Length: 131
Ligand SMILES: NC(=O)c1ccc[n+]([C@@H]2O[C@H](COP(=O)([O-])OP(=O)(O)OC[C@H]3O[C@@H](n4cnc5c(N)ncnc54)[C@H](OP(=O)(O)O)[C@@H]3O)[C@@H](O)[C@H]2O)c1
Image (cartoon, rainbow, N blue to C red; front, side, top):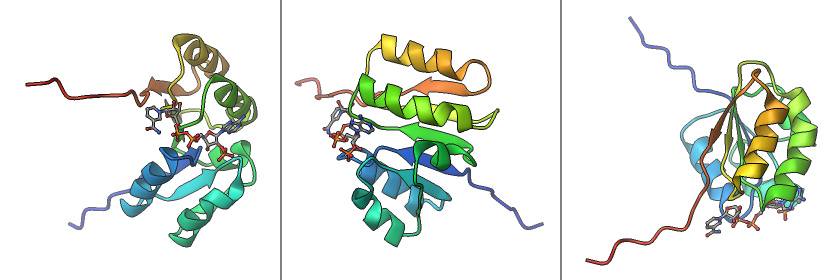
């Protein structure tokens, strides 16, 4: 029997130096991808590659199985979450990758309640242990 693999629909919010290439990898892997960035022009290469550009964070997440935020800091996360959280569907998963402290993550978790699972996966600086 033919195996049918369904890839999750991903909404990616924040297409800065980190977010844009990460979103590109998701697109290359075949995920249906909707993107949003405060400066919409930065989404152009991803749209050319097949991503859908949303007009707002809420529009980006409405249909998503997985939401990824990769934003500058706590204020950006709070601002984006205020718009997006009411629109995210129950049962979705939210991966918060911005480098923000526990207070910002707790605030996001409180907004999401138990409708949406939240994974914290900040990009932190890493350097190899000297040998
Ligand atoms: N770059 C690195 O090597 C590195 C390493 C470790 C950790 N990090 C962390 O990773 C995260 C992203 O870094 P980055 O290098 O991608 O930063 P970046 O290039 O400055 O991108 C920041 C993103 O946040 C958005 N943003 C900023 N303020 C906003 C607001 N008020 N509302 C909505 N969106 C807002 C920006 O939108 P616009 O495009 O409109 O400005 C952009 O999409 C940060 O938390 C950073 O500390 C980065």
